[in-house]
Length: 383
Ligand SMILES: Cc1cc2nc3c(=O)[nH]c(=O)nc-3n(C[C@H](O)[C@H](O)[C@H](O)COP(=O)(O)OP(=O)(O)OC[C@H]3O[C@@H](n4cnc5c(N)ncnc54)[C@H](O)[C@@H]3O)c2cc1C
Image (cartoon, rainbow, N blue to C red; front, side, top):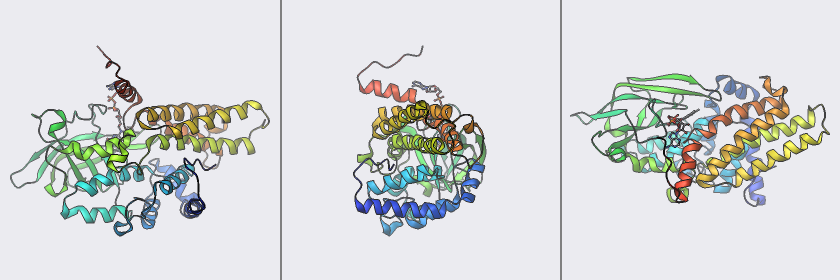
């Protein structure tokens, strides 16, 4: 299946073949085993290979290192990568942030960073969430104080900073004006991870490795500030919208990240692996219950792929979690064995990864409230 959300022309089919050949060459069993063993869904060789091809920021113009791909071509590329379980965490975070760097970085660093990123030499990571809470993103305690020489001194911590240990920069949300009203006192930085005082430690979650990052008296040159002082919300808006699955047409982020489709593709991976399992491994291949379960899962994939906007994100996350859970039951007990070479292990991997789809980029509970607000329903009370 191609899971396409559009009519596939001969040119697009040819592009799909090109993508498949590329992935066959780069995603060797050794590379996949290394990426899986580290548990962080990243491999520098793969990241660089995508960059060398212009496919890391695929819709960027060739003059700045992209490939100028169309929306349909990016869909094909992303679907094929998902179906191979390619290690793409830092690809996703880098793509999410790139438009804000392009639009808001200061001229002194802008062109260099753009070149490094599009070539796959530099990964970018999202630094919003803090130990005191992530849903209320504007409640930022990490503090940057301006010095007489123009530099900033930064103190605080971020948590769940996924991919920070591979990234060169953190797209960092800090408080620069505690007296101002919430969003009005926030500033964004493209913080070099190598600065003295930045310390990264691992957090191993069920599905993936992420990080906690501490900032102790980090001296940050002002050239790494993105956008205006206290104007961070304008810089953040595009990437936030992209993670929420809204506003893409306005901000130019749509082709970079379609969050519902990401979750639906994760389920598609589990579905494909389960079909292979049923064909090759199932003891009772003719059992109608197997066909029924697979049919159910495919429906979930298709409805997730068709979903859009805030409600689509909730729907796709739910389908991904429930669908991978049902498929794991189907392939049990084979799925409970951590063996890279079994189809069932792909189902387990997708199921573990699925759990965070209801959390990152905002939890489904928060999104349900946002949908309710759009419908004109009263805000919930928690007292
Ligand atoms: C694996 C993983 C990777 C992540 N990667 C990143 C990353 O790269 N960068 C980054 O900045 N963050 C990242 N996050 C953080 C993620 O965005 C937050 O976990 C998420 O936004 C929820 O914040 P929280 O964990 O602080 O929970 P809290 O905000 O403390 O919420 C706790 C509970 O209360 C509920 N809740 C809170 N507020 C409301 C509300 N208004 N209405 C209804 N229910 C509510 C939530 O649904 C949740 O169940 C990652 C998280 C995980 C688990």
